[in-house]
Amino acid sequence: MPARIIKTTGAIVEVGPANGKHFQLEELQAIVGGYIEVVRLPDGQLMFANEDGLSQGLPFNSLASSYYRAKIVGDVLITSDDLVE
Image (cartoon, rainbow, N blue to C red; front, side):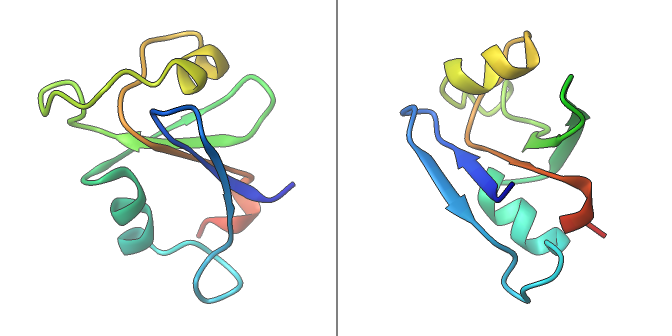
């Protein structure tokens, strides 16, 4: 399954790592807009979110929140662990 960015608008954008193999830390930080926090979803995939999103006042992400069943703010990346080193 391809990696996808879940935007706060509800838009879903399929993406791949810039190097074609694995997402790098800088890429993940650029996607979420800051320091990353990673959580494992019930289906085994990884969700990368902005660790400081609440304190930064990022908008609520209802779609990402429904995947994790907790309040998530800001844009997130969801991917399988084989695309992250």
